[in-house]
Length: 267
Image (cartoon, rainbow, N blue to C red):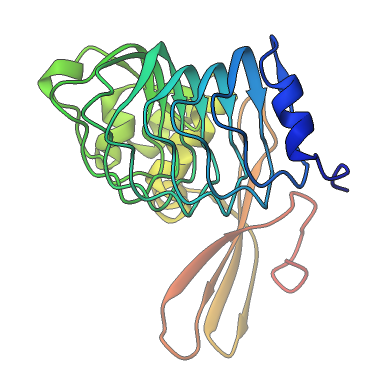
């Protein structure tokens, strides 16, 4: 449940402190000259559409502000979180993120990064499906999360930067060349999180074919043969999938099901 609406005057009275928490409120704007030394939290403020020019904060959290249309001109922050803000499509002409972090998960409207963003520590673009490349002027000192983006390679200026996929550290082969990953290789990976990422990148169908999965049940339906397949995974729950064919298209689908399933019909 949202907090009570925050009067504009109260925002003005409190915004010039060390931190300001307006998360989950009905606030729709902030007063001109707002400056917060440390953390300004506006998470899930669904009425928020605009922010004042020259907004300054150490850490600005705007995640879940689904109606926010734009970021303010001359924005000045160290850490910026704009995750799940689908209405954001452009950047201000002037701004600064000073050597901190940009978290822009699932910002499906963004197509590029701004020219004034030249050096940051961490860059999380997971789910930014329309971003297809990173600029040649950008320096990232720590890591970049490229999961579910349109990025297929790093520019030379970022060739040595660490990569993540939904928070899991990966190499460029896993991120950009999943066709080079072999099913048996995945079985030998001890780290369960990394193994799950590799499974995602390879796909259940190819993985199950390459590791010779155990068939624990078989029957038919209007689409044809169905199979219930199982693969044991060290240190994790088994992978259990049902393989079915669509009766209209004859296309096969591999669907992961709970490990307790023992028959195709049950799955």
